[in-house]
Length: 426
Ligand code: GKR
Ligand code: MG
Image (tube, rainbow, N blue to C red; front, top):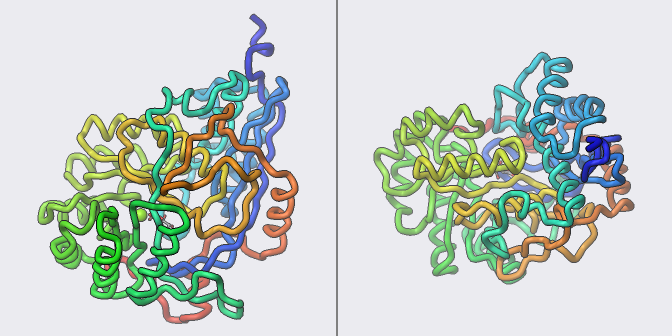
């Protein structure tokens, strides 16, 4: 058989389109979300006339790496995912000397291979699914659930961006305001789990918010994630106070050693998307007993198949598996939904920033939230279709918005000049 005539074909050209979409001023440990989120939409085309979609971050250094890979991909067989990794390793070696990657002031990786490979892997899987007439979840072993539950992701927030008109969510500061924010999320989307982004105010205030949520939403699964804002002592205290209220406590304190110290003195399961963010963090975390739930993220872990591998490792070592998120568009939501559907041990509701978003690049109708969950798209591949006009408009917004990276801390300092990120402060 001529390899060029195989289903899927060979990569003929690749585009990487940076886009910007509006985002409210959501607060976190390192600062506040800027007026726009930057994302990159990857499109991989083959000589079989097929195209696949991927989505990822769009910070300047990451974009340069994506471009280097895009230029090196033509000729790759659409089913050769191991070949993709070789191309990425070679392209990164040549373009960056193999340096690490940093995102949003919270996550630092010693290698960029996984984060750069991820959107291309998703695009190739989308393309493979289209070639075979099967959804991506089938390529990952088959969906074990028809719908994927997501959680309401609450943020303390300003009423509006400085100089702006404000948004429909209003201020999120007091427990009452946060209950109102949760009420709207639950009413509009039907979420059965609620996650509070913490690390913004003193722990006492954040505990009161969780307690107010527990009183207002009995029976909902609750989580708080201060992104490592607390000391070990504070984390142990909070865990004691909220034991029986939370389903898990996410990244109370930084580092594998810190998390292990908390875990030794608490019954509450600890989750992380900060101290275990790459395969080489798993062995030390398991050895230390640092985390009970790993939060996957296919954008960070090298794509959907590597995330499925992570699921297997968690199962092997008796750790739970959940999924966290970053601000994202519908291509990512589709990929997250296929992955979660095909991962048997992903039994927690996944996080999503989706409700905060007012702009989109895919055509409507496929990714609807009902009862807090999204149905696994049934169409071939990811099952979503790009809206070319919307893509062009959000690209234009990227060109004119002036942002070229995620800078939560710098943006916060334009309002609070002496702000410092709160890591392990309280
Ligand atoms: O959007 O500010 C945010 C979140 O804090 C995000 O950056 C985190 O990566 O949601 C993520 C988390 O669970 O830590
Ligand atoms: Mg987190």
